[in-house]
Length: 233
Image 1 (cartoon, rainbow, N blue to C red):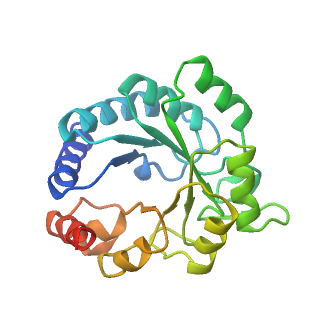
Image 2: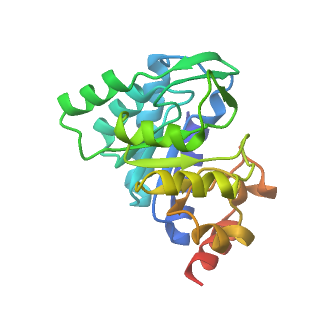
C-alpha cells in the first residue's frame, strides 16, 4: 500500500500541475478482475487512494471499480466526495474475459438516490472494450438505452482494447443518437487530441501519459504537460 499510495499521490500532483480537468482512480492493476462485486479489501484500499488523490491534487475525482462494480464505486464516491463514477456495463449484457456480465442499473440508481448522491454523475461505456455484446445491438441503440433507461449522464466510446483508438464513425453515431455528452475512452494521443476534441465532448486519457505510451506505468510529467499544451492550443 505504501508504494501504491505514493504512486497515486505523485500521479495526481502531476495531472493537477499539468492542467488536467479531473482525475479518475481505478484498480487497473487488479487483473484478473472480479466479474461481480469486488472484495472489501479492494473497496478499502481504493477509498484510501481516492481520498489521497482528491486531497493532494485538488481535482474533481472520478471512480471506476473494475470490472463492473458500480455499487463499490458509488460507496467510495460517498466517502470521498467524488464527482462521478464510471460503470463499464450499465445496460444489457456482454461477454468478457470474466464471463457474462449483466447490468445492475436498477439497484445502482436507487442506491444513489437513497444515499442522496444525485450529485455524483454516472458515466457509462457503450460497446465497452475487451467485450462483445450478448445479442444484437448497435452502438447508437446501446447509447440511447444507457441514457433513456439506464439514466446515464455521460457516454464513453472506446476502442476494442486498452490503448486502441475508437472508431470516428462510432463516436458520431452515438452523438447523433443522443444529446448527452460523449467522451473518448481510449486511444487518444497528444498528436490526435485536437482532432478528437472536434468530435467528442471530452477525452479520458491513460496510456499516452505514461512511460513509452503504455498502460500501467507511472505518469510521465513531460508527456502529461505536452498533452495539455495541445488542448490549450
